Amino acid sequence: MSHLVLIRHGQSEWNAANRFNGWIDTQLSPTGIKQAQAAGQALKEEGLAFDAAYSSALSRTIMTIDEVLTTLGQLYVPQTKTWRLNERHYGSLQGENKDAMFAKYGHDQVQIWRRSYEILPPKIHVFEPEVTIDGKRYPAFDRRYNKLKYGQLPVSENIQSTVKRVLPLWQKNIRPELEAGKNILIVAHGTSVRALTKIIEGTAPADIVKLEIPNAEPIVYNFDNKLNILNKKVLKQKSL
Ligand SMILES: O=C(O)[C@H](O)COP(=O)(O)O
Image 1: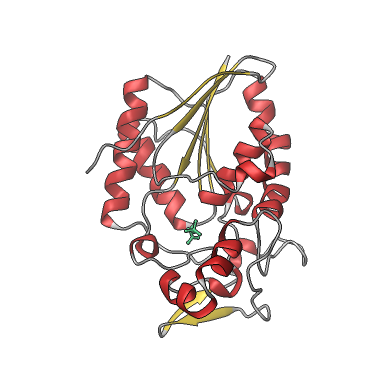
Image 2 (image 1 turned 120 degrees about the vertical axis):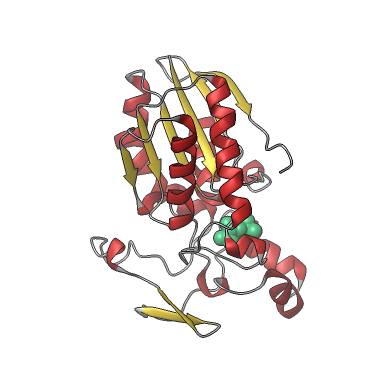
């Protein structure tokens, strides 16, 4: 028997500001830090002990996993930080305010870019080493991605393409660890958690697009050794 816990990171500064994050490396907001600590406390009350922990390569999941493991008293757990768990790349919407995009393109079009299974948001134009948003410079493709092959670097992603890049991590690492009876903690993003949910539960595209993932609410799976789901529950955030 094994446990898998999936968590979307705590509120980021750009979640709070209603801006598209994607691969831009935003930090947790003060509320996001408290949410991550609350998620750790909820897991502590479940009595869970982890054998391995995974986050994306982005600061908002790394900050969240550190708060969760610190609250659990399990900072010793080996951690893997991988681009495969990054948020879907939001193309040229990255950095933009969501309401401004609704006003510019219409609500229905922006919702298609946000939630369609196979339609891509507008692509970024070129592989620029840096992007400038509001006068601040952000690395677009920095050294954490320099081992990726050309073609692995996205210019825009949807749920379908996020599933494709998450799948090798599931098959090579996470699935074998769960089959060996290990307890795994994963802190990822809205769409990489959707991708994992689809892989684990075989959710149809029509249903996965409707799945909303709140910040910092642990989704706790309990599997048998053939990875059948024995139980699934969500530990809700109490209001802070
Ligand atoms: O990248 C982001 O900004 C977040 O994941 C939220 O995107 P969404 O509001 O479209 O889910």
